[in-house]
Image 1: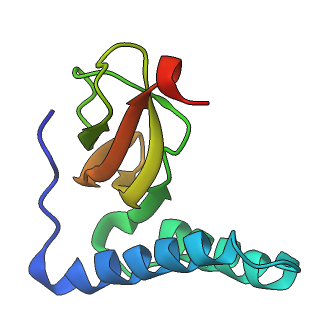
Image 2 (image 1 turned 45 degrees about the horizontal axis):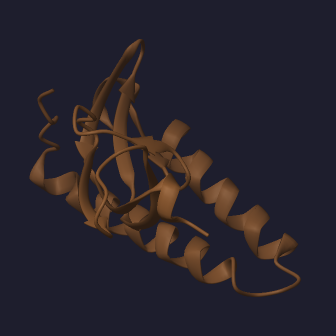
Length: 123
């Protein structure tokens, strides 16, 4: 799968979405997150629907935590924790998947960087 090359002037949006992702990860550790979580959801919706890109495309962020992983998966770069390479699941997301969405087109702009581990060794 080929990664979509975002024009240089729009790379700031990737950086912003990565910061939103980092805030969400930190937010998981805080109690009483409802109001902040709502604001982050709205911010992500703005990136998806309201950016001033040509031809009306938007950026979609996806956190693949907890999803199954295999070596044919093209939207993640993985480091394997532990010995086994069978029955892998994503246990940590360092950088999220970001896709550009335009009409029916959906292409990866940024691959996720993840840590995976065998489901058999997770206690």
